[in-house]
Image 1: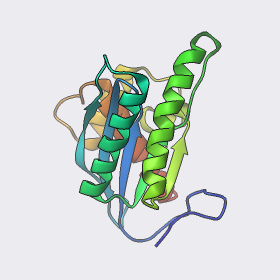
Image 2: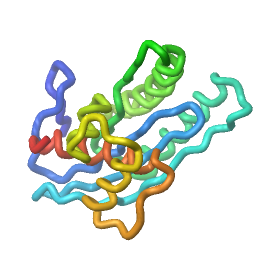
Image 3: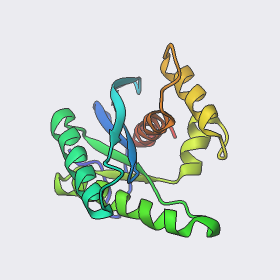
Length: 177
């Protein structure tokens, strides 16, 4: 069952969902696979980072990212994908452009498989998980650790961000975020 409206927005579903959350990057990308049960309970299935070859060209790293995300999709078969939308600050325009390339690769990988996609603003994810739209990396790590009952903070911070993105996407899907 596809769970997107014609305008691309998510609608609530009653069945189980598996959300792949991606914190895109061109050097390191965090990922998390989270299962949501019928009662909206969440369970982390897998989480980690995709490390891209830093010395390679941008085009090579994007190819690597595409192949890695495609492999994650094939392995975990998510019902939905959540990815952060681009945040840009006037002082970091080139970083936003590079991040947009990585996001495009993730969006393409999901779209080619017909998986519904939620694009979440970073401030929305931070507010939903840490209660503060300007939460620091450490605050996000602590919030994810607490909400998921983890014994230690997820490392590196990209993993915590990906878990938060998946949690926020799953909660939005369930109509509770």
